[in-house]
Image (spheres, each protein chain N blue to C red):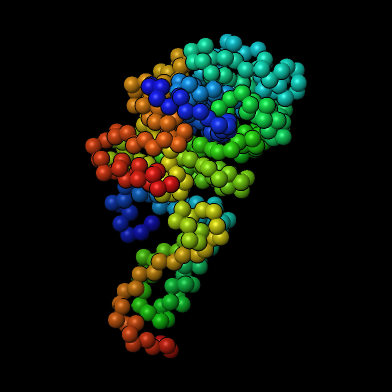
Length: 274
Length: 94
């Protein structure tokens, strides 16, 4: 990916929570790729895994062997914040704060999360919080310190219903900026009328679209290898690279996974309006 | 649901189901309740004009905002009128 935007100075740190309600729709994959993508553009990024007891972001990032301290240690004061941060050697400026595997959600409170984030804000351009599935305490912890949200969904009834619930909860918690990532879209199925299109999902959830990620087997390969595919030549890699640019406020046309150009123009039209 | 269910794509089925589901999720109002409200509205309007009750739709949405979010919820009804000319000679006590 070109480094064209890295010279721009970020004035303050932006804290983004990646959430979905339903599990398995791609929160962790999205967190890893957006975080890595921002770091590739020269930003200082801190990824925080807030899924206490079921940590995943470390393996998706390929950093699982380097964990010494974790989020719960920081909160409990067993280590300094800096000690729990794992530096990703492949990308300067990219750090991960892993979650604890042997503890439960009640080990951290929203107030403690806010404190940790406030501390990290001084050193980073972006803090990305990988939210656990569900709407219980883990969710409350993850959203406590965030300024904006990426809501991940797939074009399925159950995922959309949960996303709608999450959007309602985010609104009730005072979130002003929520953007939609539609994951695992299959154009062949959309064409057959067997899958809701990105437009359909946007119409239903009624929040601004920020990314359409095609269903791509390369995502599995990249997870196997512990290397986020953002910026690679694969369809999902390209789509995530565009999400990264849009997160920074750039206007990027939507990729054409299909011949129906008018459709994608329509979708991107929605994005520009929002 | 309606007459032509055989021809409906699974995508359309999903959209229709979500539409109804999310209304009740958002305002805590059950689909049954919405059907009752719809039936009563149709009954009242039918007193004054000929409407296509089969194809009328009611929705709880957010006033003014096209997004349906972030405001006071309002009830929207879309009621197709079958015969516009019948409105000219209204018979108040049909």
